[in-house]
Length: 71
Image 1 (spheres, rainbow, N blue to C red):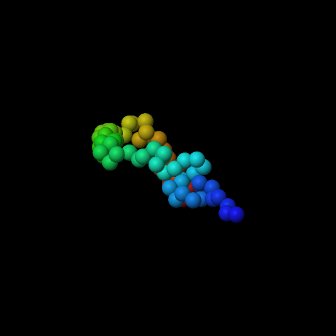
Image 2 (cartoon, rainbow, N blue to C red):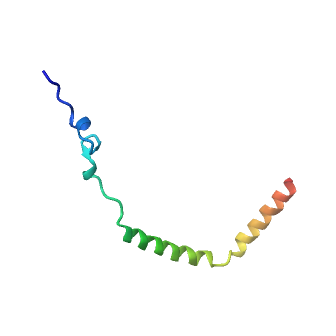
Image 3 (tube, helix red, strand yellow):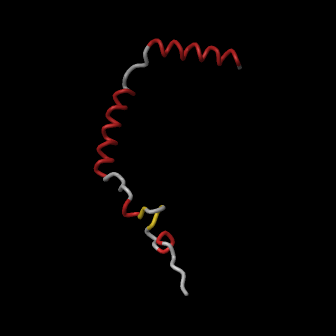
């Protein structure tokens, strides 16, 4: 008498209980990844080129003073 192997163990394509590798959602198409990357760079490049607001600069100066006093 032979024992039946479960589908999970006999099929190398299986990646999880009841789900084969073919059933998983594919990754993003490279063209879409490239487009998203270009858009993100455009947004963040613009942000990086903006000056630091005076209020943030004042806070950073105060922090530098406190760190200088601690040494």
